[in-house]
Length: 143
Image 1 (cartoon, one colour):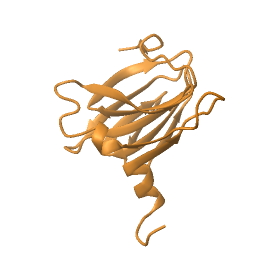
Image 2: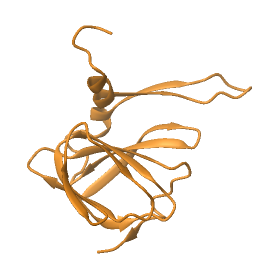
Image 3: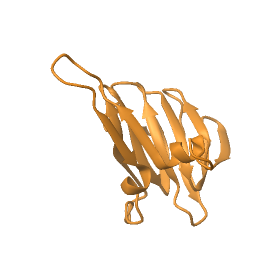
Image 4: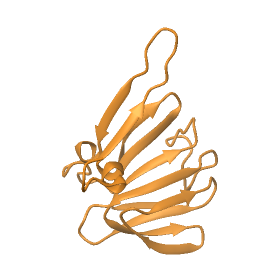
């Protein structure tokens, strides 16, 4: 590693993904920069938006920006959320806490959760979920 290059800067700036190989094709490597996915105009006038960031077989990571996502649950998916930048108030079950850059948040399935951006800086996260994740069909809003 070059001097000054830290693990955090690698995690925040770039995702490196190695694809699964079959007999018919060779492994694929993709490099995606979070800032190229979640740029200044990514969110527009929406309160929350996600886009695929990396995918291997049935495991994927979404990059997203959140101003506010309402309290909700998932019956089938566990989440691991990594905060890239910005601050937010997270509601995780009955608990509220402030989260910020570098925080990793484990959210088991069926646990109500929400996020609301705090301050002017965009709240950008990476979300990894249980294989087979289908957020459009497995999100139940509670408020």
